[in-house]
Length: 270
Image (tube, rainbow, N blue to C red; front, side, top):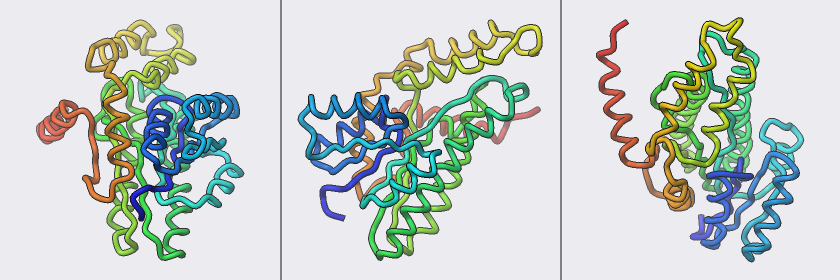
């Protein structure tokens, strides 16, 4: 791959995905920002014009769960797929409606795998280098109360990425994960609101006030409200690089916490 890459970013309509798309385009990479819904296309295209990035940043509708959007996306010529789109369902695992679980896995695991398989097949057939970067999470490596379903999708994505990384080495195709901490983009806060669509104090064992207190204890601290600029800066460095770690946890104190948690996991009792 040349110094400047052709990069497709999914989930680029807001948050870290949008920030990464703009940052990579400013560095001169040819970026396609895939966004879920049409109003995001309009809004981001206006921002592209305002920033003068028309020559490096193209905005397209790409709902990763829409078969027609995906089929069209697979016609694009790219060097790197930054698979960033995702949704989050939270709440007690022993009570959450299973249809919400299925939808979370569809968006966060099955759809990214399907899109990655399509681009990988293109690169192999064309005998080209390529790279897939999956947005996982700090939650791909541990399980906080209240977030079991969302992080289970990221645990699954970790396994998918690790297997792909090994399997694709003979084809000169690289795979990485990016594992953000709790950055204040609105994503985690929205996810924390989702259970209150279905939690009912007259039916559920888990009470709404207790669930809110759990989320507040995780997201109401400075460690749960990190400045996303730090993560965006890391992404625009990691995604185009041809060298680096397979797993990329940011910030460092979260990586240290996860390593400590994984070591202690061997001593957990019931």
